[in-house]
Image (cartoon, rainbow, N blue to C red; front, side, top):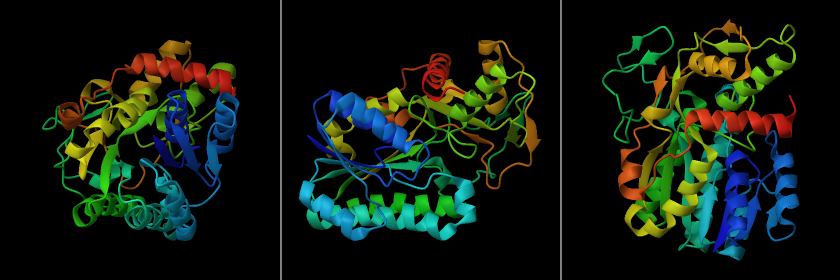
Length: 345
């Protein structure tokens, strides 16, 4: 099969591309290499797979470039991962955020509609389309917030509420993906992701929190008296965490064979209730794993930050035959090992 991966040098994109190439698939990556770590992931893919794939350094904001590439390739699958991923960046530059996430996604959809109507389009959306979830009743415990009425997490019927420029731009693209299936028959599938982590993730302070705090823990282990870092809010915010190996398996092994049944549908994707962590709980795990003490400085809570988001993954389990396999303890250990080998904190 021929795969076009937008944002293919990002965290998830590089892992998807690597797995496709290992399976002998034909891979073309579209990436403008603006994301932290994308150039390193490009070199990693080249070192592992030589010239058996193609890199197009283009920007999804350029409609003509996207259309040209889709018309030439007529890919079997478009994995649309290119995007602006940070809430803080969207607040600093809402226009840029819109152009990348909303307009860039429309460019992808229009290119498929006009030039490659049989392509499958898999889109990486976000739990932020549900807003801050402040209408939910929470209980505060010593280490986390709990949503008692949602013991299995939030499913796809959760009301949409686009808040913050990032929520608006990703929500816009999310809805365009579903509408192009309704109106034009484009075979789209939308994944509303919770927190993902794993190798090839060059996390920053505002995106990729599991990887970021793993890095802070390693830096503290190397300089116990000389490293400081911050958390926003009280650290009791909860997310379900999902290792990238489980994500790659979802994209490559669980969707394509079932596309006739699931085209035009949306799935909440995360580690589920069994793999949820608060920031404080992650920090305690890291302390135990590394034999250190972490004393972060606290900043005010971020605007529109959800106290709890845990994905109810029952629909993905029922329709896609997918559920996570990598437990958080194993995944975090793997993340620490990768950071020590590749990033050298």
